[in-house]
Image (tube, rainbow, N blue to C red; front, side, top):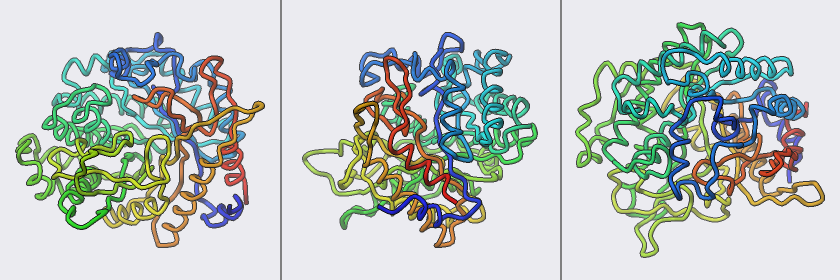
Length: 456
């Protein structure tokens, strides 16, 4: 195993290391905010694997100082968090909650006091339920609701937060939420999933404009991009289709290229894309200052098999509406999410994205792995996670050596949390959280990442 100091020496001196979380997964205290679509979704029997809900999650609202101390002691330079829209504006639009806004004031100020740069995400999937009932992301009014929300965040926190992302992983919101239905709001309607993907990007563009007007210096967006590989001959059409909906739909809209002819053609049986307008395409292409990439695993495409789809979480061609007959075919080794471990995929997607969006600084905003962890004598040894992080940090260094303008890397996640539809059954944290007592125990991976972060 390569030493942490050797990994750090491969990265530029000003390269930023950080950790990331999201609001619904850790905050708890749902009684002090409005209802989100994930609260409603979690009440559907079987929607969450183990039946867990947003309370207490990691009880982060009540344990903020302790958690910020864990980040400080880790020695990282930045902390990426998301704001709960229903905590900040409980009714989705209109008045800001003083209690909710004060919580994020304390979070941001606490980071700065500890020498950690706060990096804020406006939307990490927990849409106010009241807005869902008005049409959610399918509503033409959503771009205004979102811009007003983002603008209010910018006005409140833009004096202290330099980097703000509008959205986290719109692909997930659109296709896991509206095509496969395994994420909130739990809808299975493939034409709607394509429209939601587009409208998310239009809303993001309006959000970028609102953030800038509010004084935020570096607005951006976070996408879950990955490299898509044909695992055998004869699946090139499926590979291109999956790449189109996973990657190019979003990067093309950011670049001002609109929705490509090949995506329109391959989805023509589902939609005529009549909801796309010149004004919407122009808004989606509002310039960004940086792009975050969340990478966990590559996508391998193979011919259909009698055994059906792969068992990896979310790895189903149904998440790519209009896909020609194919299956996703990850290769071992796997994480407990059923996702293939391949650090080279990170290098590849960074290089591919730089070609698609030249001149935009890139950040790895999420990267990490779920494994089954055991507490033994008060310690958690997780060598598989250490190996995963080590390999991907080196892959980031390889991309930089190849000329990619990569500025930083955020480990997912600071702590074990609610892994969305997987509940507490899948743990990504470098800090163990006892689900009964909420006790935090730094894992061996925490010590490893700390050693990388603090090496000079």
